[in-house]
Length: 196
Image (cartoon, rainbow, N blue to C red; front, side, top):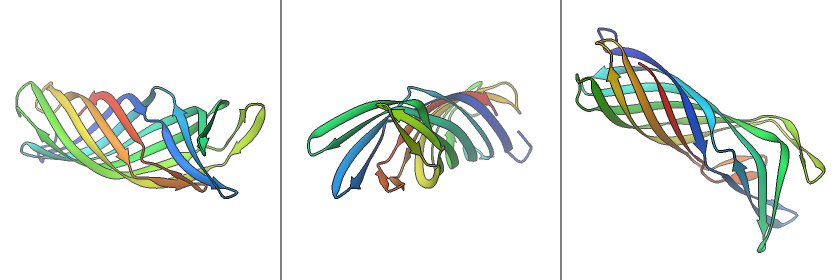
């Protein structure tokens, strides 16, 4: 921690993403679809911040890859589900500005809570998947969406300039559209540990 209260941070951990729901219209018929996501993926975060007494203003960048290998589609009460190989991948790059409140400042253990907002850049990787014996091309695409976040964590203050931390974050995006599919908001919960 610099004399002017500026610090840098870095951490690694895991993220859990909700199933991805969306709808599309084909030949005049509306379909509701749901992509099943794997249970967890690794993620990392780096950032820079500044302390103002018990408050901190922090800018961070985080990255994780979301994988899916199943889809269910519903139309007019009929539902069809299918798994596919290989997994389709979405890269999520999260840019966020957060306001954090420290408690028990100056003690060895310092809990904190905060809120954040920013933008998530979602990149769909181009690949060919096989579902029920049929090859389907997933086209490369990018979409940037707004998100907000709720944050909670605890710091262990090693000395006046260094702290270890563990942190949990809930991120929820706005809805978005990729390749004429309207996706609903997606939520992701992450847990990570690192040094500040």
